[in-house]
Every structure is written in structure tokens, then in C-alpha cells.
Image 1 (tube, rainbow, N blue to C red):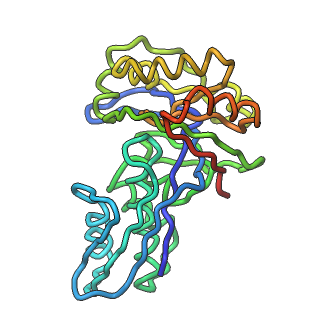
Image 2 (cartoon, helix red, strand yellow):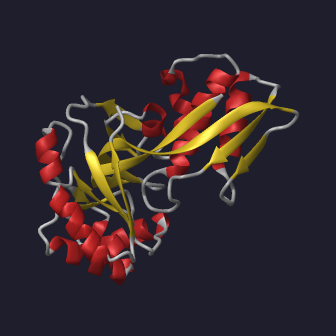
Image 3 (cartoon, rainbow, N blue to C red):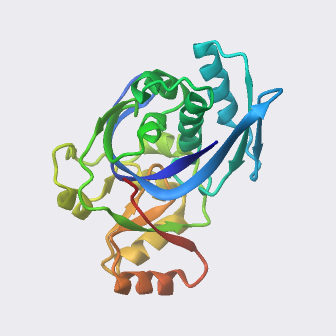
Length: 266
């Protein structure tokens, strides 16, 4: 049995508060057609085999929690074909966790509604609830609350993957030292408004950590390209890029920085 784990793009990300343990956010998020593939088969023990070495693979935690919740004694082998670039802010780990929960639900023939799996997803991560549904959504709280949105026009993306990597914890830590932007609130904004007003409150923090990332962003902005940063970065994106914009980005990147063109899934 096969389950796909889809990456995501944060069209907007606003930090709206903080508790003792985590920041509170609001974000408009879309799933994109970049995905890992998880293959489930019977096994004598629970095991995860991946084409990419992942330290402390969270898939094991998802298996453990799912089996404990539903008192399952059988075992499973999951083969992970990882294609989502790691540590770019597009939700690879969260996607794998949620795909594991969906996959186990089918594999063990429980067929529980996704609503019932929400507490498990939230217990395992911050973007996991969104990745459980893989539909355009407004997420809030620490990412543990969700409101599904009408898809409307299917969006396309040019995603840029700089060589620089950023640690989410470091970006949030740096955020506390940056100037805070004014709140907009995107829940009831139109898709056109959102696309024309991409916003990420972690952007300045990410750029202050890595000067090369900031330089690349500014170079793209000088070409009047509407560039967004997803998650805590460093991946950047253009929504609905034209052929002219794609050509210009290729020239700027000059084969030194990877990019990918993909679409929203619905």
C-alpha cells in the first residue's frame, strides 16, 4: 500500500503572540505537488527504510503513537522514498508524519475519519495537522488549529532552494530580536489579495542569520519579482510565474541555485 506525503507553501505567516513554550501564528498554506512516497508492508517488527539518512526519523514516533492509541499488535515496514528537500521550510517531516498516520489507518483497516486522527497529528508536530488534510487552509494557534479554505484557481509555483540551510529554532530565536511588522490578518482576504501581499514575519529573522540568502532575495526583488519565503525558510517562491519571470529567475540563479516548478494539489 502506498501513501504520498505532500510538501507545503506558506503564502502568509504572521506571528500573533507567544506562550511559554511556543509562538502563536496565523498562516495561509497550500499543498504542492512535491512529495515523498511511503510504502507499507507487513513485517515481523516495526521498521522504516529510507533512501535518505534521517536522524531520529519521526515516522517511528508516528507508528508508536498510532499503535498505542488503537492497541495494535501487528507490525509494519515503511519504505520512504524521500523527494521533498530537507530543512527548507516546506514541511517534509510533518508531511511524512501525517502520511504515516493516514497510511496506518488504511493499512490496519481502521478507516477512522481524519478528524479522529487530528489529536495524534498535533501531538507529533506543528504543521502535521495541515499535512493530514493536504488542502488549502488557514492554520492558527501553534499550527494545531485549522480552517479549510475554498481552493479556487489552482496555483502554480516556482520554488527556489538556496544552498544555505536554516534551523527553525534559530530563526524563531532571532525573530525576538527583529522589528515586528504590523498585523494584517489574512483569513477573510481574497486569493488575489493574498498573492499580491505575500507576508512572512520570519523573513527578516531568516535574512539576518544568513546574508547570502538576503542578497539573493534582494536581487530577485530588484527585478520586480513577487518573492515569498515559506515557513522559516530558506526556500523562496513565486506564485503563478510567467514565462518571462521564469526565464529571468533562471538567468539570476545561473545554475548555481536549484529551483523547481510545481503546482498546488487539490
